[in-house]
Image 1: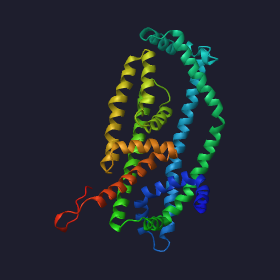
Image 2: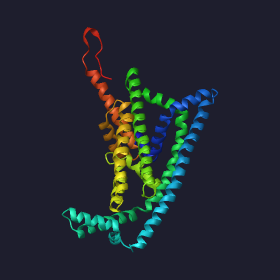
Image 3: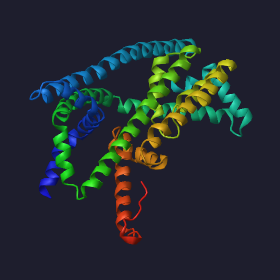
Image 4: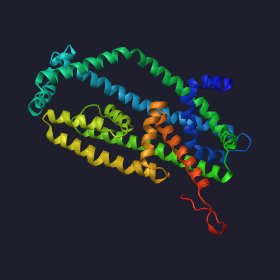
Length: 350
């Protein structure tokens, strides 16, 4: 127990990068294996691992750098627009936000169509902005530390990834040897976890990227500003179960409506429901439930609980843990199932 506690304490700071490296190594294992076969024997494992690590580095850093440059430029432009807007309407304090025409229209519309008064709505807006500003100021010092930690974690992940590429097969074999199951069930368990992992990763990540691109497209062709900024925010929001890209597109449609641009508002609303929402409802079940034998509910519970327990990696780790539990429950049901007549084996559902 003492050794286990010491090991947990040692590995705790590195759990995130190790899990990300393990996930990438697993997803790219077919490519890594094919590359090994093309290289001379003896040094093929090390060379293939080095090549794969460099390729992953370029595939992550270069696109991320391009998006970051565009994001920073449009974010600066957005901040400049907000600053000009604040100067135009003499907004110096949170309470002055009600001077904006769009906010004033929202306040009076709510006062006319709901039991609340103008003063109550204004007070809610001011208090909400004050709370948000206080929270941002209180946690602003963590932004730099978080960015620095992300950079350090990235390099640590790439360092561990090299060894997973090189020695991952042996690690998996030694780990599976400790699993107290017969070889046939080990094979089924390994195949099931592999299918669930690929389905969850492709379903969540690819769907989120596609939805983020569609959100950015809607901002690009409409009068809305900063398509890259809101496209990135849309991709992040797409990972949030139930709410998704509506967190970005619905407020955008409302803002256009109160700005008097009803045509664009209806377009963004229709785009959110008819295109972005349809893509989510169409692609995600295909990626997640079509390939892996796990329904949407366990995936949803695993994703939400996994994020709460493990952070961002829990979005993928949570459904995998749920899939493992369901697989072991299935094995237990098979053991308890009565033998089939005439000495045959019990029929199980796969």
